[in-house]
Length: 365
Ligand SMILES: *Cc1c(COP(=O)(O)O)cnc(C)c1O
Image (cartoon, rainbow, N blue to C red; front, top):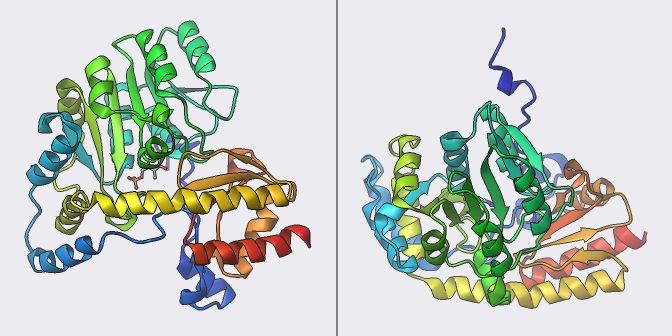
């Protein structure tokens, strides 16, 4: 059967390997498997969230509040914007999808860094648009600027600040300078999935959504509850933008795209910023150990503004990942990005100690 041409060269997102797979394939007990592959919060989520969704469980027979009034109000308050500036998605993934469908098509282009969040390209391909990438793997604002100037029909630009899967982060000032020269007809997606981490480590990296969208009417900021807030399993993300943009993105949203429990979880999570702060602080304490560990093994790493670290290893990255998995540790191979590198999510102290021990054996062995 013939299908839409845009689907011919489309590959699916390679999701992090689940714990269940290691249990099945290597016969390791689930409790002994460490998953530090998908940048989830190793400390779980706020206990207040668990309590709240337990209470909410009895409402499962009812459709959720499709206006998402409470969550939008809470986010609007957090960022000092209005609820009409906010759209909620099934993960911020969905807002990436909406952003592309709102602007990209067969007759225009989208621009992104060479090595960045895979969903930008996957969703972009579905629209039939042309995908332009910078030459450098990491975000390079000069390259973005040069490509933008020499292509008149760029409909969407993706900036991942900080960038997954490499961990680097542009300074806010260089981003704002660049955006001054971007047409108001170009939608700029600023993905802040790891902003909770970056803004803590270095205030020059902090993107304030209100300042961004007040200064640049063509920008949309994305946030997620999947990383620092520890709610990856609940699938809640959001976009913050000019009311016009948000109104258009809403046209692409199906009703009830967030479940009752997910909504409740996100609302409660926002009431416990202390939980997030503690996780962020521990993240960077543990990250320092990963830097030290890499130096001792003479492994080059990318200084990270996130909750993961990328090692440019000298042994084959797939071999390392496979051997770690046999020992019940799941990390992320970056081979599919064309890099002999691995991405490790910073775990708890105990998880990290185990990783160091097993990794060193494999790497030196
Ligand atoms: C994890 C991630 C997201 C979105 O995750 P959701 O779970 O869909 O909210 C978006 N962008 C980047 C860069 C990410 O790493």
